[in-house]
Length: 153
Image (cartoon, rainbow, N blue to C red; front, side, top):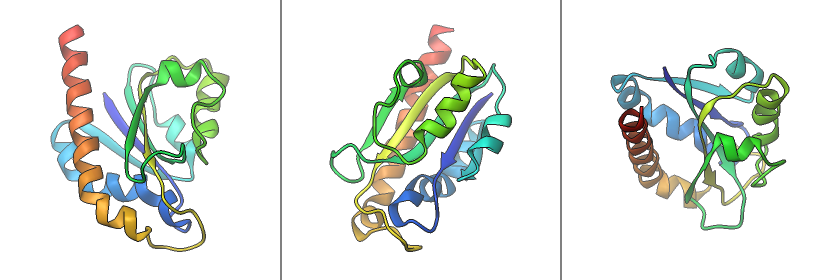
């Protein structure tokens, strides 16, 4: 089964970008047989909802210095082989749990570049304006990756 796990904190401005994007995409992804898990900050529960046969997309906010709203794709294999590729508030939690249990998940980490982190329930103006474009990029990337996986299987 293909699963998308959205991690983030709704009360930390742009840290909620993954949750907002997943909520917008949820109906379309479900129609494509992709199970959407809105995990927020409960990454442990998200981990236990995964099976080793699942193809997993972890969607999270990240800060690498790139243009706000850009979406970065990194295979879970690459992410798990390094301590941390990006500065993300939640990356170590989910990935370290996968490492701890020796879980060989196939899939991708999809990081959405943030503009602003701080207390607040709204996205920054920059990400709020780019949200439709961010969702299109995420959906297209997922479709392409799944198509390639089916072709290579």
